[in-house]
Amino acid sequence: MIVAGRRKSIAFFISLGAALILVTLLLYIGWVLLNWKNGILIFLSVLMVMLIISGVVLNTIFLVREIRRNAQHDAFINAVTHELKTPVASIRLYLETLQTRAVDEGKRREFYRIMLSDSDRLLATIEQVLRTGRVGHSGRALNRAPLDLDQLIGACVERVRKVHEVAADAIEFHAGPPATVLGDAEEVSAAVSNLIDNAVKYSGPEAKVRIETENLEGKFAVVRVHDSGPGIPKPELKQIFKRFYRVAGPQTTRVKGTGLGLYIVRSVAKRHGGRAWAESEGPGKGSTFVLQLPLAKENPRAAEPARTESHA
Image (cartoon, rainbow, N blue to C red):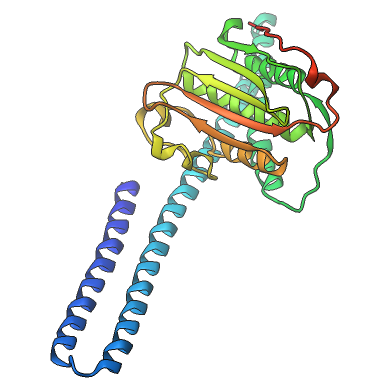
């Protein structure tokens, strides 16, 4: 109902803008036909008409953007509310069970495990929201240090495996040439973790994620994360990195999230002098997300021969 209402609002403002422009043009053409000899007045009228049309167009664009932005904010609030409320409700339920009933040691340990998992989920959501504010603030200084990219990715892979409890062969890491990047360990880890986490979530129960690294012209380290998910329509490839933006569709809406992960990835890449982008052949054909970061200037390992490892 809410989505339909917003679509009607967008259609209304577009129709209103088009109608005003049409009426203005008809009045102008009629006036010119009746007063074709007044050259100066015609010139001024043309200028005035162009200003009016420009104002109407800009006003319509602004209104449509505001409606869409409000829709994204509402979706974000709903998503964050769900991501915060669900683990809290789960933890509360298990605590009440432990408080009111006699539970054997095996069940007690299982309850503790579930509550710790829910606590991790809750903390991850809070950290995601807080990190969005940090990476979006360009004035915040980076705590730069040399980072071994292979070790960092390996740690992120293990973290995602633990969180999603996927099989050992669900995530494969094929390391390219050794690379050292100069960056903020917390931010780079967050960016890589978000890419792997998204790939696992959108690939479904039978997740197959492949991570590859390469050295680009001796200047950049490139991380590619391939997934077997629903794919992304080409018009959406740039939009998905916007804050709060989520691709619409039955296969994507089932995946819970805040719409902040890819925004964080792009912001981290930009703050480190790199880039982030997505590639996909279209719906049903999976996606590839690419994170490009500058190599450290002093990178003695970059000259070593390439190697390929598979961490399954």
